Length: 360
Image: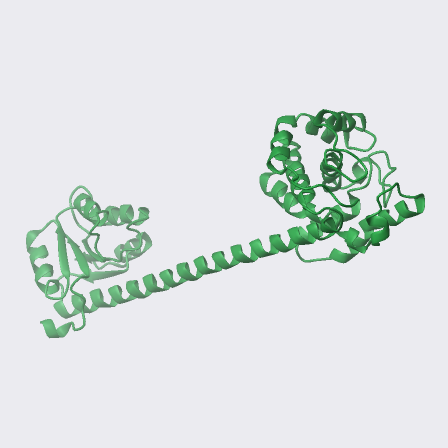
């Protein structure tokens, strides 16, 4: 008999479930030369074995059993995540089509009809174990590939975000040696966005895009951008062009994050009362992201050291935000921002300047 089922793995386990000892004995004699065999005389014991650490690789399940019949046992096994993929072969004297249909609907892999034939039993068991192994191998390969792709996507996302952060800092390094302005400002915008009703993913994306707000400054001549004294009206007009320059540098993109950065670059100097630039937009004509960044950008500029000014105190800066509510800033956002004082202090302390600024 051993020669009729070559190349079987003795570590492979088959569970036989039948309430009649004679049936168990017959199947055990057929299978034991080639497989490790477990037996159960009822459905509940079968489920317990299947859920154990030594779970079977395949189950031969009698249909007609007292209390918990084969169909119900199969249904319960297929409900459990740990056992749902174990191939189940029904062993039954019932060969009617409706019985077979019911079994397959419950997830059975095949039927063995009594009286059983040893060669048929061995062939069916071998076939379904092989199919199961192939499916498991494929599932493992898919899981491995999925994990590899997830890691790769994470690496690509981290790289993309770092490139965007460095783009945002490119302009800052021309007039801000530490580059911490974009870091603090982005965190201010993040907490304001959350408090104003944006979801965490939306607020996080805004934090990632905010550093691109002044990207256009790389197109401003040094003699204007780095001027120590007060700008002339003509020079300030040149400074204003950085919004459009940033907008054009980023350009239309498939990336939602880059398009968000593009919108921020263009609109973060618009004012609620329509006196901002470049479009002189009024109120809610200004995109929400531009209104959010405007608050965080101005607040950090006020509380930071510049060659032409000292850093304002936190209270003085918040007082100006309050004063400019409805003028420079969205009044709702200004009110929310003022209420974030404890969180603002934490960000300021976390990202303190260690060197003085050397430009505008």
